[in-house]
Image (cartoon, rainbow, N blue to C red):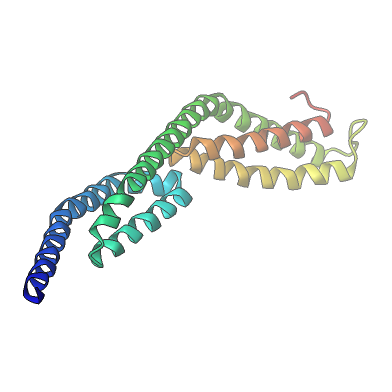
Length: 198
């Protein structure tokens, strides 16, 4: 009786071990496939959805730990959620990338006229400031303080315009337009304060 129950226990143990071994290959393959899928989108995800990428990394690392401990059943049970998380991450990052590319294309279109208008405005202000600085009588509505403010504004506009132009030259039209529009707005205010038509 004792011998037969030992034999039954040994058989059960062998079946369990075989069962675990049978799950090992699918578990390893599932983790490898998920790891590969995440590697393919890692750069894009890191750029457009870094927080979500961090969460998915943590999820995948937990599954890798389970795999290392030999919990193949746990790995296989966790994989659908991991794969869904990777798929959602890809969708989010792709959508944000397309949005950013759309905004960049729009900004590129806006930059064209801006890059032509703003330098003309800055040149006109510069010319006006030179004339008023040499004049003994300032026109009505223009004070010495207004002129001094226009002079200092001119320097900051030239510096900001240089930053905008550099951004455009490097292909970052979104930043270029943001900075360029700020210069245009400032130029309009200064022209108004000097009695010029913008």
